[in-house]
Image (cartoon, rainbow, N blue to C red; front, side, top):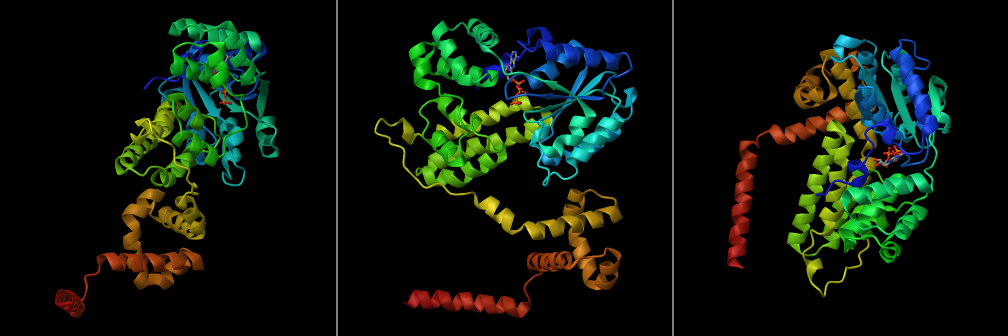
Length: 442
Ligand SMILES: Nc1ncnc2c1ncn2[C@@H]1O[C@H](COP(=O)(O)OP(=O)(O)OP(=O)(O)O)[C@@H](O)[C@H]1O
């Protein structure tokens, strides 16, 4: 599958980054103060609208100064522990990292949800206080009140929206490198629609070029929409399932701000509603499962892999339908459903919280992680609890909700492990036998 152009043509060095001269100057002065051993600030907060080069600048800086980049998406609340453990490691220089120079990049700190990610801002502040390495934070909107501690702790550097000429240079370079004919007027049109967002402009260029092989004003007018409000989940699903072209399905998943994982759930819920042929359904789930694998790898290895997730979630699911290839095909209008999984999560939140805190309490005593406690130790604990509940209630200070969870688990495990008693077994066999004969007679 083709690599997304905005990744393929991402500037490798500060020189190649268009427009942001002031920001580049401030960034290089800052990094040089670090290299001289006397940092003016421990961290900078790069902020500005989407697609103007925040991540690009951080990556180019690391490359120019030969610093190893340690990149993490801060808005993913599951990274909270990683931020904490990074704070520990970043407080020690040199040998522990193996490499001398290192640059820490925490992307999208404004994506932190102050309530859901409680503790994340504190963890970042702790990281900034302890760090022996430079840190770059990025945000689209740094003015949220919950981000004030970060604004105080970091040097703020603003990136401006890209103007027409830098954007045109970016697009022209790509047209030349890809050897595609691009009309000037068409590039101007794309730029007008993109509101200074280079990623959007490049995506649109790629969409038109892949759809038609050339980029003319008529084609651009046909295909490029104003960088608009984000698609809501229902629109995003409809655009994926009804897509006629690869690029349409792809921009349906990239033009929505719904969390990628949530979008996977939406697709998961609605594939069998939209597709009626079982083989189409099978192929769509196959693409979706691969999208999920790439999403997990992207979190571990690097966000560049996200591009494959988009390919599989969008075009992968859209063209799983062979029905679509028939000339008579007409997309079926269906009422999409909210993912059951999310509803279940909401319903079971209290129980899951109680299980979480129970695991944490046990984990502290046996010195094991939450996962290890859950998988290896919990069944034993539940058996042990039956005999020693008074002692354990006191020692672990168990709440009523936690006790309920243990009761629930206990009956669950019993159901799985206990063999039916001899009489029950006989009774069941007798019942089955008589039902069989009754059916046979009738
Ligand atoms: N100033 C620039 N010069 C050259 N290319 C740019 C510039 N800004 C952005 N781009 C192009 O746009 C793509 C997206 O940019 P980038 O990911 O750095 O944006 P961002 O500001 O971090 O956006 P977001 O806030 O959405 O994460 C880059 O991969 C690059 O191809």
